[in-house]
Length: 409
Image 1: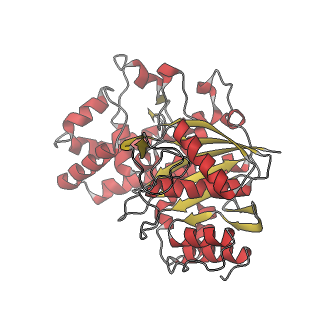
Image 2: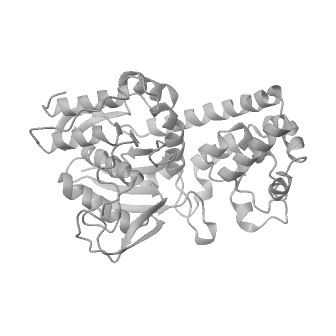
Image 3: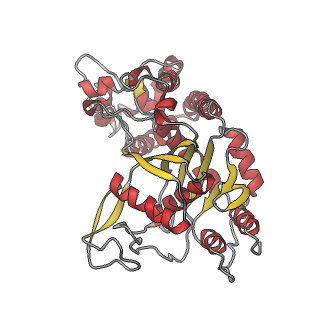
């Protein structure tokens, strides 16, 4: 019997016109063993200090989509924390890192331009520490303002040089952290546009309505559970997002939306637990699963709740590899080599599948036709749904799973 932790986050859009990705870090250790800090002293966490060395000074946690962006680096360079800054912002500020001087020097031309644009008011709230946490809108609006103001290619290149150094250090930190726990695996599941079979239906045994995000989260949880042995224990930690519930619907209802009232809100621990139980019932596993946390991507010091560093890694992995998984022509082998060349330990994207016993198979997956064909094969159906036709890596991972079960590849 082994103890595992699974850290999950998503990246991108999950509507029919975009492809989102859910990433999971499956690690054979407890959360407290991975934090590398006493439970009562989260500020002493080794990994949090490493984040500060790479990204500081900046608010914790480092959001990959914002911090791994030259324009995001401009805005971080504009943040000033003073004695007048509110307590929460000061507590969440990472100390000065290795790139502080280079970032500020590279950002000066862009900051000077932003002060002459409509973004100046928001920049002022960053500069005085009033609202120092960046948003996607901030980066989008600042980029548009800099484009209109005519930021030079040379200035943008200097910013990119700093960002590349930070990016590479973060990649290295992720790899070292996962290598420190031998047997760690990385799961990546891409949302694929398809005819919507099951989308909008109430998931049996839950009050959760299946959308394209939930569909992918289900698949990731299933893949993770198939890696574990009967009797193993799994703590699940998920960075939440908005989903749709059917309030007042019978938990046992199957198919359709039931007679309840649809409500949209954050995925919480109780609903996530019911989703996990539905997956367990479907695949028949004896793994003991507990929902360790369902959190927003932020610290809440006023509640003494500290974001686990491996959730920061989950955000980084999902965001980093979303565009990689959109490659239509990459073979599965090429994709896995690229993952390992970026920040994953060798072999982390594959694992022995124990439920049922299928040997070592890829953990990079996709929803839609590939998932439907694999599910039919694992259920022992004689006639399988049509195989996917694209992208190449999706076709190949599907063939590997179906072939391992003895079905037609």
